[in-house]
Length: 516
Image (cartoon, rainbow, N blue to C red; front, side, top):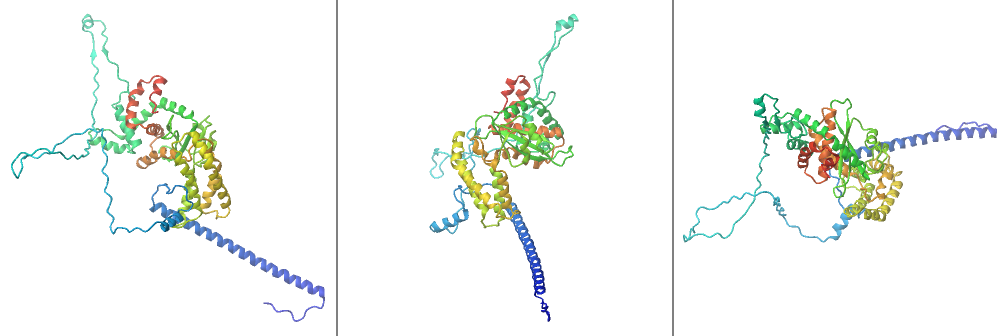
């Protein structure tokens, strides 16, 4: 601390000036100190936020690695704090003595369909006399048990024979002989050894069960058939080309529906320079609904909004999608997906750490109330759904909106909870759009279920060699998924389709081949 000068001027004005300078100098030092403190506090806050962000990422990574991937949520949607509910139940339930060793539940035997053929094998005794008195034994009953026998698929060759006929009389007279022979049976792939059932088996194995062509090649080799994957690939592309009229008819039917859903996923195509191409899926109808049920795939070399815009050209109905902005270019009325919004709050909840509860739990429980209502309305008509949503869901959504607005500024912006809140607020007009029509769903899970077989199959076959192969996969995946959503067994439907398609020379005949 500086010492006071021994001699001060006698002039009062000069003293005031010196005092003012000292005061200003001290104020500047204090201001600098305050700025340093504020700057340190900002740095400290940033480090705290970063630490919290890293902890959230760690907890979420631990959850994803060691926990089930199912998004099912326990509860009926009526409880705001699940942890408090469990604590209350433990306090109110009477104590029950537990046995020292719980007996494992007896496993239930698998059920065998009654329509399967039965072959009776009788296991009888040879000596039917009583070992005690020697009298003949009488049959008092029997014990019956069943076993399942597996018979491998039967492969046979159909040998098509067309006898040729000519006239002997004309031959003897030396006139021109007209050889007569039956017409060739129309085939989806002319001059090919592939029958409709073989093509259906190959397509169903790959698109339905995720069995790549190279594995099918080995299976056919074990059965004594030399059938390369290149040959099977050419067959699939040829089938897809022949299915173009049916595909166009299905697309026209799709665009006539009032409600559609869509999604997209990546696919690697070797002859395309881009690292990621995309398979888009469009569909209508639910498993439990009536009317047209369709699933169509569309391969494109990118994810730009121009692709759904071109595919849905002229469509102005409802389109249920996730939060991807590319769908904004379409003319459709976009409907959001509450499953995506809830998923972000679930991630924030898991990032809190095991056993901890917070604001994310409140949001999840509130969203679960919306799903509880939808579960009760699952089998109801669209008019009933609309009425009940206006009565029950609309107030719940208003409460959730108020909570989001109140919480958005009270949470660090880099946290997962803040990102979940921001996503919900940005998507809010689309998220509440399902209130407008009872035919709309609360989420876009149907599209995710439709595209899931493609994603699972992609893990096995990894990539498509060519663009034509990717386009063929889009056609065939769509046909298989459409058959499934309409309750048809894909292999049986494809066998009939490939048998009758060569004979469908009119639109009326073609319509009869549609899966629905």
